[in-house]
Image (cartoon, rainbow, N blue to C red):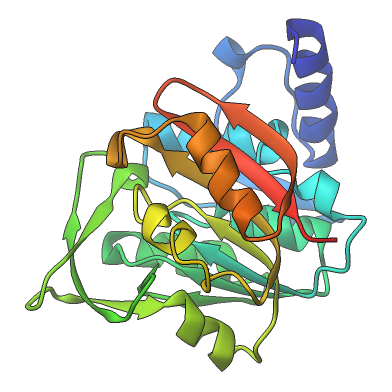
Length: 243
């Protein structure tokens, strides 16, 4: 995306939220966004990563929510919700959908509870992985970099994606993953995404020392057609659909 196209995209998407965008250096995190005519108040920690995530999810649409609008999306799982921006954006695009957000970092629970209070988004304070068990949180500094490590005496519950899908009726229209390396265990299990029709994920190359093609091939091996791929130096974002 060139600079002019990126500016136009950010400008238009900001206006839809009742915001003004002219350049990144003068744009500040909003405390309120316009949500189809209703004011939604946001709470979040003062972190650079939160600012970057807001631009990525709301103004750049890096996770491809616009692309998914042509599909029937009625049930969404947000794995690694952080302060809830993806879930909120999903509610904006899919107002009648059922949304479940999973975030194991309890330091973010009050922000999530506040941000979801007007939007009928269900919060689960659990990690999601390839299998159920206990994990230990590894707080890396900013909240969006929190990682989990499998630990028999860990104080945080991890539930398998398979169990989540079964609990929610056996079929998921859209799964988003941003779980700081834990995405590979899910992607490398050939059975994990059989009941998922659309996916959008941030993958992290530092976690397995693979490359962008490996990530694309894994997503396609589950039957997804790649509709958007944004590779970067240490990570990338892929959106895919089986429709």
